[in-house]
Image (tube, rainbow, N blue to C red):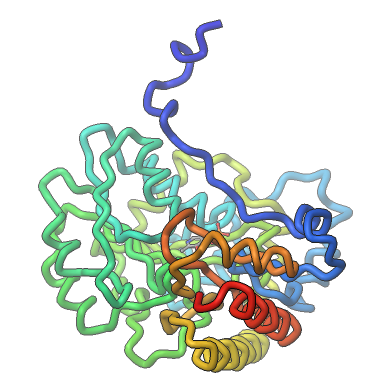
Length: 366
Ligand SMILES: Cc1ncc(COP(=O)(O)O)c(C=O)c1O
């Protein structure tokens, strides 16, 4: 069999998404009983009680397909967000929505502008559609360079991905810079604002993408239940988009793309705003404590609006291995001089701080 002849030529050079190490692998490797998985920006606590109850109740009915139109969840989201149900699209994680948008919009001659470093799925879904990705480096403060992104837009640009806050740096662009960008972005470009970490943000400078959505402008806002709502394993995210785009995405998506368990979990999660506030507050406390330890140990980092911190180090490989030996899983980026450290429980933070202290004692300045 000539597999190269069978598989579409542009798929050959694509690289599969590399998931972070699993706790079970690290338990075996490190010999530590307690593993602190801080590599995938998950919430350390389980799904909300209301969501768990709802999801349990649906289990006996899994012989039936889910509601392919996700009516109840869309109605609930629409009510909460002040948009129409017809302007909402639900996906198997917001990751699926990124890919569906690429499938609906992109062709081989098109260009896609996105910041870099940022979420790996932007170049992946661009490559999938044989389009050309245009990576625009972040500024020296690790923030989107919106003027440079504007400059990178050409007649061929179909899509711009914005990641606010940005993964992996945790930074946001502010309202003023964003409004200037929106005023100048050409009307043939669809702007996708990925707000996966929206619920963690506390900065008053943050431009909530939804405030700029009017149902006509080519703007999509993507959010997820994977982060503060702790439903990463259920896979459910949503987008707010002009009706015409929602209709196009409905044509390319699978008929039953979101499981009934995920739909119910998301629906009931939306009933507990107090828990969102509590988790955001706890995240802030743990993050502040981690910052204070970084400061004490002379470690540079980028202040974050998310549940992870971009720790700067000239020795990422050695530090990654030193933390792993202590049962702490963080995210590395090969030889890029940084590691992404997730915010977890107080126990996770204590263990991370002890492991970093041990790394400094062993390796010297990190
Ligand atoms: C910026 C960003 N967007 C989207 C996603 C995808 O999230 P999910 O598919 O779990 O909704 C992630 C996940 O880490 C992310 O960091």
